Structure formats: structure tokens, C-alpha cells
Image (tube, rainbow, N blue to C red; front, side, top):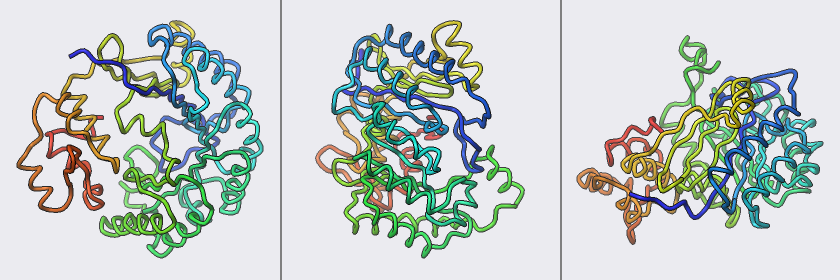
Length: 390
């Protein structure tokens, strides 16, 4: 099956460093006291040059600086990277260019310079509006700094996302309701509301395994927090367009939609993943995890890519189903069947419809609000796929 490149294309750029490591974080991040920004700038630019030779000219609809804490990057470095991206893949005036930032004062001082460098959307890692919650999560800012960071960002950016986390140890439903009601009054165009997940290799994971992380919510309590979030956000004018993401109309994350709609994106930086369609084949790409290794490989070969796997039709279909079912718009069944080597499990499909967890309308498959809480189970049952394999 020969594939055409996806209609949209984006670039994810991973910055691996943070000032300190959060106990819940399972991303590829590192704390460093000294960083050679000049060496990193050269490496990112060289990687982009190398990738452009293979990918060729495409219009780029989205660039996302993630991490880590990309707001540790000098604005001039961000500007140099965006200039190089625009040289290889035209960035239109409508392109979304996002940078993740912490609410600390050292970051907010650079917001205007990031805007001048070409960033037009900011994603602020608030996580909690309560100081006790921030302390539990190991965050270095206060609730006052979080509100101040939003106010400052609002002067420079029309598109802003606020990250909040629920399901924290000893967090009550009433506390979560109050945090949501307060943050919706800010008027940010986009809210990402994630449930705390205990990953085994994190500090929280080790404490949990040792029985030293009390106060985590039950499965039922976490589901209630999820349902309350939808109610409060809907009342405030937000639309849930993905399992954990809410936006005013027109403020949806274009970059994340690339992932959920299984479009093409280039992954740059230590630990970055990508999905690319080249010479009629779709492939998954990975990069070296260790920052020093990634830098060395880019210096030696022009690329920090560590692994490339051609995706079979079944793998593409399974991935598309898993990702698209996260969206309110659901799964295009015609596209799914064009990719799939086997039909959906009709018996399970009927079963989940009967239980009110999915619905089918005009050749699209959707999860209901209740069904979205069982997403991994639904995908596994419908296509005999382990969602953890992606």
C-alpha cells in the first residue's frame, strides 16, 4: 500500500532540561546547572538541515517546543530555530508555534522576547492553584506566581494553554471544583486537565511501591473529578474536544491534533518521537535519549535519530483508532477500514454500544463521556491491540 504524505505536517522539538525534576514526571528530562546553549543551537540547526534533505519541502502548520522546560532556552535560540524551519518548510502566517513555560518570574521576564522570536502560543505548566498542591507535586512556583504568569502572558499572546493536574494525593473533589472554577475565570483559550498518573520509575512511583504515597483517589473518585471537570468547563464556554483537553472554539491545539489525527510530524531532540510518510511508507522514528549522546550523534552524522520502524497497515490502523477515539470528532471508519487488514470486532462493537460507551453516526465512531474513561479497554477489545505498545 503506497501512502501519500499527510495533508498537514508539524515539528516537535524537545528541550531536555529543567531547573529541577518533578516527582511525577516520566518524560525524558534532566536537571543541569550548566548548559552550552551555543552547542545546542548548532545541533538543532544541523538536525533540521539533515531532516529537510530527506523530507523535502512541505508547508509546516505547527511547531511545538516541549520538554523539559523550553522556557529555559534563550529567545534568540528559539528565533534561530524558527528561522531555519521557515527556510526548509514554509511557516505560514497561520502556523501555530507553541512553547511550554513555567510560571516562575525568571520565565515570565522572557515572554515578550519569545513573542518577538516567533512564538504565538504559550502553554503554562500551572498544575495547581493551591500552594499545598504545588508543594506535593514538587513545583517551584506559587499560586500567586501562576496567576501573575497568566496575566503577563495575556499581554503578549492571543493563544494560551493552562495545564492543571487532578487526582493528586489528598485532593478533595471540592478542592478540584474550586480550582477549576477559579481558572475558568482567567479566560485562557485552552485548558489541559490531566489526571496524575503514577509511573513506576519516577520518585512518586518508587514511593507508591513502598507504600509511602497515601491519599491517592479511588478509581471512582477520579472518574467523578473527570466528570465535574466537563460540567464546569462546559458551563464556562469550553468545549471538550479530546479526553483531557478543553478549548474555546478556534483555540484547539493544532499541534496535538496532528498526533490525534495521525498526521506527519518530525521529532527533533533527545527522546523525541516522530511519524513520517516518506517514499510512500509511514514510519515511526525515535532519537537517542541521553542529551550528550544525541549531541554527539548530530555532530558525527547530522542526525540524532536512533531507530526507524516501518509501520504495517495493522499498526497504522491500530494507532489511528487509539488516537482518534480520544477526540470528540471520533474515528473516520472509512479511513480506518482503508488502513486495516481486518474488520473491527463487530460483537464487541455491539456490546460497547449497548452499554452506552460508544456510538456510530454517519460513518464515524465516537466514545461517549463514560466510554472515554475506558479508552484503552475499548481499543484493546475492538482490535485486539495493546494500547501500551504505542
